[in-house]
Image (cartoon, rainbow, N blue to C red; front, side, top):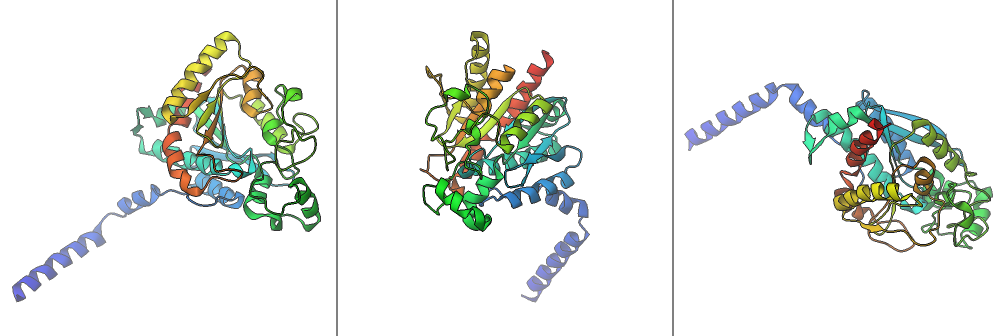
Length: 344
């Protein structure tokens, strides 16, 4: 018995000594691979800004950020670049307030792709380092910070003098969980100059949802996005929304461009298992991808993640499946954006 105890103590001492002498580089490698973005939470504007700065500090060679404008209530709108390539693509989220799980998705995609880049491995056949050396992916994870803040935190997050206006726009309700618009009651995804005059179901005044504004591109947030797109000149655009697991990809394309974009949409549909939405006779425009497709004659995709929860946000529990479905969308778009870029 004494011999067994002595042997165990000897083994324990050896193991303890090995652990103490283990090169610190191994533990630092483990720490380096740890996620910065935690997408399994109510992801606020302030958490996003904090994580953007942490990511830029951790990955200074491939991640940079800038502000591209301010919201109606003065919140800076952040754009983050990932990669070093001359070709560009554009991914965004949270045009609509209650659809903030798309910000979680944008930010987690940014974090994960940076980790893939450093690992120098192929992921599902994608050579991430090569792709991000050819194409820079630009993200605007939260187009509508005022609306998201109102939806998540309620009236208390806004000046008391504005409460009456916000309640009026919300049809007398103090509950903001269904809110889609920006802080001034304008639906940002009905603000782009794409057949704006013929947008359907417009309430004609500021509202929690659907109000297209007095004219296209009058909201500060929309102005910022339009100017930014002009500046970065992306080959493809992906706008994330909720919900329904569907994919919009068309808006008045010519026959040749329709065929081109359908091929891309089918490939993204295969990755996500989302249902493609085909053209209606009289589609209602005003969306970012509607404008991008018609203005730039390039592919634009609107992906609606998650199972429809009614007039509110998706539960955080839907993130895991949404990430599984969309994990490779950004890499696909970046890779094929470069192919389009080479044709110029």
